[in-house]
Length: 524
Ligand SMILES: *Cc1c(COP(=O)(O)O)cnc(C)c1O
Image (cartoon, rainbow, N blue to C red; front, side, top):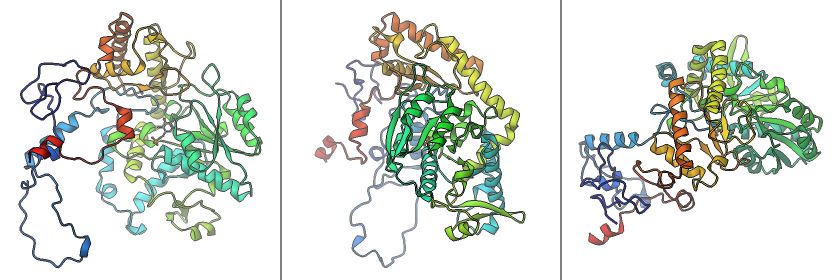
């Protein structure tokens, strides 16, 4: 196996060399980037600091004895290192990001401008409330819009992601059961097609998860829910539109049955982007739902920023919402921070979910998105998201296979791997070949109800031209797979800095600490 100057194999893991090795290890403008620890030297620094004055240490025997081992680099070296790393990243700003269930839409720059206004960007969560009245008013306004859009009477703003919101909603449900002396309910119903966070949330809270099968058309039958309901069921966690990209047609009947059985209805609202301005989930009879601001309301996510997962609550759950919450009195909004204060207002919070009040920067971005779109713009965004997904479905349905027949979808379109049968190409291979074509793959192998699932969510922010190129690319890949060009798939990705990695091993045996390579140690 040949090595480049960095000591890394130029052979690319599949036994085949992608291109002639270069002296530097770089491939054109794609730099082979070593780790900063390999590049830096302990005796080097990009800044000159005066020698510190002698001080008496108060660290006692916990003071560090040896070198800290941080790499030293000149300023341009440090800048280049991070710029090169950033260029290895795939981002919504570099290309279409069809990851289903994630709503990777464009993040308008206006939102960034607003979030950086000094009055929002420079405040501190420990500032006295009297100095941040504007920020509190913004949280209240955003919360009000979210309640309006969902048709729900109460909201908890502090959860910091969708999964965190699920925990918030389920803790409110548990608090309501406990307050009613109904603490023997140990079961949470979760459909087979659910996102993994749903059963994880239920299990984390100590509930047993009972799985509801999916019908052959990809939705949940009210009769299956009714058969699973009983005095031991605390709640159902149902996603709508569901993870197959389909609106649950029996959701109202399901909600009624759940309530008749004394249980609560948690709705996973991660797919809200399909129905904003079209459907108010409150009208469907739900009790709690998280909203991923980082999906539906276009705040950056993934590597781009933190999430925010406010939870809307029904009348019956409102009083159990966590601290802090905003209370308006005599025309003034203030944050209620303590149980004692909450109780004087008739509330009964289940506790506190986070330090402080939630992701302020994301609140500003989400509100900027809403205000710049207006109610008609938000409705249009949802309509266009659904249109884009169906455009993609129409452009691919004759060459790829849909698991639940040829029916219209909501904001994402689901294919299975039936069209790859007997080609020797798997869903994973297909996704890897997309990387060589310059695309982040779609969501693969999820939802689990579908064999070799490929879930594509183009979102409303892609132009028709970019959708067309993507469709043409997938059509060419399906042609190649069926024509027996298996190598193009099984050896993909060929043009990336690293080829196929052992992702399972990386997850099971993570190496979190860099150690000098053994040869180097021996030579020193
Ligand atoms: C994204 C997603 C979640 C979890 O949201 P996070 O913000 O990533 O924690 C839950 N359910 C569904 C259906 C999702 O798509």
